[in-house]
View 1: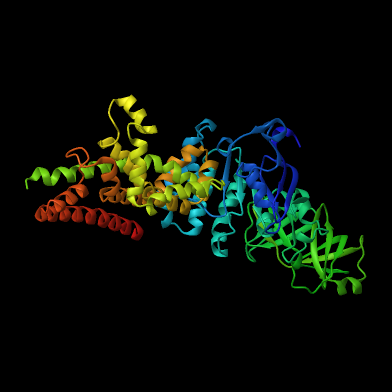
View 2: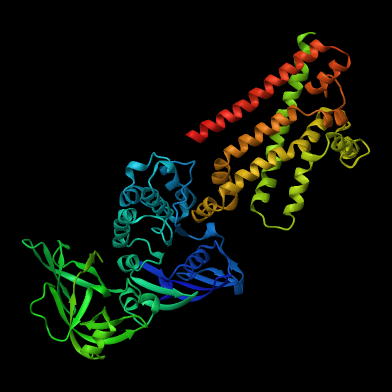
Length: 361
Length: 224
């Protein structure tokens, strides 16, 4: 990657629970996810980048500007780093109303140029909240205000530390569409920390996996998610992300036909304009395999594929990685099925995909 | 007893308490902020020193202050050089003594307020481009109003009611150091019970109003 368009990060930080030891180049565009279990060091990494934590040795270079380098004694204090930070909790200032909360950073980072306030307010749907005090907001509203506040200080990039973790499922669903919109606009790069694989599958373009304070995978989201050899990605939520182009919409059955590199898929509802690119999330547990094409199945999406890798652990199930055209998807099947079907790498099979979640790319 | 002998001591007490409170807020803020933030090994020592006036008899404090503030003392001699007047048995000396005497009553509520504020809001302010000083004035201070309210009322009321230290350092000079508590003592000594009654009742009412308004305002904020 070109140094002018990346955040170069190198940190070692000793903690009683873990040792953070990472070296990374994160792209300064789109959303880069940092995924890992709780206590893996994700939050510490973000705090180091923000300057809230001062590690033993560290280096941070943002688009060629050195923000921190302990070898040459370069250190920018938190307020001198042009970042936005969204914490797990909204951390709104209780003595200021919503408008003055979101203007707090705006006034202090005037040198970054004037961001379009009305645009950000509209993007996060907080027009009606501007006159309220933080204690008059719901959890979801408060977090939206916190995101607007971070965006409005016109940062080089925004750090988000599990911004949805403190919310219940309903509130998460309330905020995710706003993050989708932010992602679709792509104006400001985001580094997004999460331990939720659904969130990173939905939002991220680039994905870094951290385990025990170390980077175990780093790449575009499609290729990292199918790393079936990584135990942390092989859990119940395992799945893949692929892209498809909208080809047709069947009004009568309310289904959209998509063209993917390995074949055509039907997804429920109207997924978008013809020709639009959409992102599909296919969970491993929604994919099953057949040796021959089943002809009496209720499952609409049956696609030829080739077994790319088989990863089984001590449990009853195994993850099978499949090549479907250019794409890779994963299927969760039992170890017994693998034995009885005598599945091996390179075998031609048919993947039955029971459900597909569709997102704008 | 004419109005002057009744109200002059009260006025002097209120003046002393007001000036002391203003000075104390300026001195106590950095001390309390440091105490709330630091993990330095000097913390316990500073805490102890600040709290001493709570347990020491006013006469002990007054005695040491008399020596230090006197024309031969470290601070007193410097003051004489600077102004030509002695610090002891003067209004200025009373302000200095009162500030030390009431210091814990200003510092404690502020420490409690700053501690309950926590790091979270400050961190958010820093990431939004506020320097540490800026974040203190724009976030920590306004969020600690209740701590300040308690500190102001307690410092004011405590200074209003002080007796021993004033007597030791300031004596009993009408219009200069004869505050209301001294005046009451004086009237009782000369068996002027009626005047002592009036002065005492006056002090009682003022103290009651001060505390009542603090609790009232505090409660109003809580329910808001």
